[in-house]
Amino acid sequence: SDPGLVERARAAKAALGERLFVLGHHYQRDEVIQFADVTGDSFKLARDAAGRPAAEFIVFCGVHFMAESADILTSPTQRVILPDLAAGCSMADMARLRQVEDAWDAMADAGIQDSVVPVTYMNSSADIKAFCGRNGGVVCTSSNADVALEWAQEQRPGAKILFLPDQHLGRNTAVLKMGMSLEDCVVWDPQQPGGGLSAEELQDARMILWKGHCSVHGRFSADVVDELRIKHPGINILVHPECTHEVVLKADLVGSTEFIIKTIEAAEPGTVWAIGTELNLVQRLKDAHPDKTIVFLDRNVCYCSTMNRIDLPHLVWALENLVAGTVVNQITVDPETEADALLALQRMLDLPG
Ligand code: CIZ
Ligand code: SF4
Image (cartoon, rainbow, N blue to C red; front, side):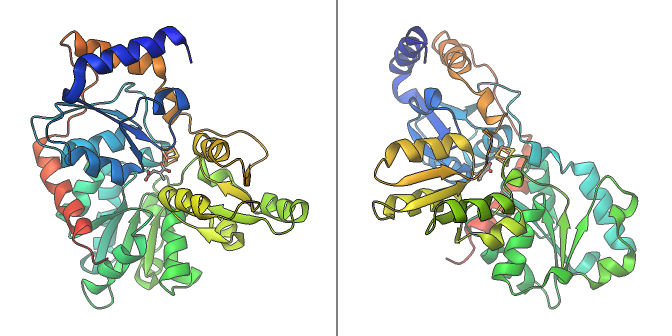
């Protein structure tokens, strides 16, 4: 990265001292990660921010929904800053509150709304988390989706689950961890009238999956898994549960980004791994573990384009403004949304395990 910018970022961080806390998501660029006080997945980072009450400014190097979660979990005096407001998440954008409310009304029309418990993945906007909070639901992460689904099923006998917004995480968890079948799952398509489902299909389903997906993890293909197994006999395939069901079925290990990192750290020297998650993280793991062979589970490069919007120039711009006394790109969730979203987040924090 540009030595001038590196120097300016260092100077700005030094000038702000304890007033500043920089969070770096695992999918961020190296040029940004070098300035993170802590790295992690979205959930760990939001909790780390909440554990730093002395930090007035939380600079979140990640995407918009993560900064919202940090704002919800930190105190009102702490200000959360996203260095580029264009750093959204295509998956989170696939579930808009209006669309989810329409689906909810259709579930009332089909006579099932009283038995549906909404569960949203952390990767969703604050107003979707708030919808879940208001309607008896919960937030989950890729590490606790099974526990959250179990909790949801226990809310009432014969409970159905509306899973937002990632159909793949929902399906993979339901089928591989909850003993449901693919037939128990239906997909609600917000682009179609009535979600593309009949009242009968809704009544018969146990799991109503929102038709959303991650544009990065959704790209990995089962064909590449087959090719790599031929090319590198003994290879271990390690993927994130946002990958398609087909890919997950062919993998050896499936888990969150934190799980992927721990697995590679614990792996024996000389072992061979193909990793199906965002490329910045895979490249960093490869660099950190030269004693292991690590390949990317795709023939092409595929970064998360919105994560990559946070680059060193944007970080320096945000930090230097703070030094000059100007808070730029602050992310704030309105108090009503925040209170409801917090209900759903608190239910997650209270889950067993
Ligand atoms: O795909 C993502 O953006 C993930 C895994 C985010 C997170 O940290 O939960
Ligand atoms: Fe969203 Fe996927 Fe990017 Fe994560 S990797 S921020 S889920 S688009």
